[in-house]
Image (cartoon, rainbow, N blue to C red; front, side, top):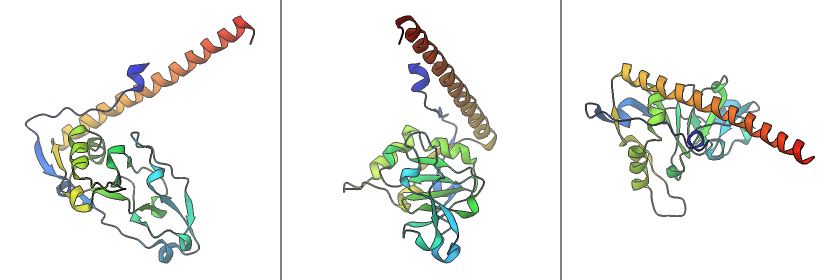
Length: 206
């Protein structure tokens, strides 16, 4: 159980991989939008920092607002395949991969850097954001104020070890197979834990 709960996708670096800057393989914050002008009376999905679960990448798309009531920080237009990287306290790992049916009306907070892959596998870049060698760069760039953060220049300069596209796809496939196995095992553990509880209740008459 502990192994399953503590699972973290890991990318083992090969010394032969090229080291690139993030801005060489992703466009950063390339699509700005004004929801008030764009949507007016229509609704849109707003992704703020609290919408992305720390450490898991799970994005909550349930925060629906009317365009004219959009907060001033709602400025980052997102589309499927984009990566959301929280620039506020990035050590908390509020990073998400956008995969949603209605991204034509989906806007993220300026608290995120929105990465649009241009010359790399998007999922590979996404999983790379959680690796220690990238997190350490972000942590070292954070300010010391009340809201430690990094800026767009820091994001652009992140150094990423990058294999060729075929290897990127292979690693992504391997990681996602592992994630699927972990999720299935979590379900199995839950089923057996409930069976144990039911049996204890039956024995003790509770």
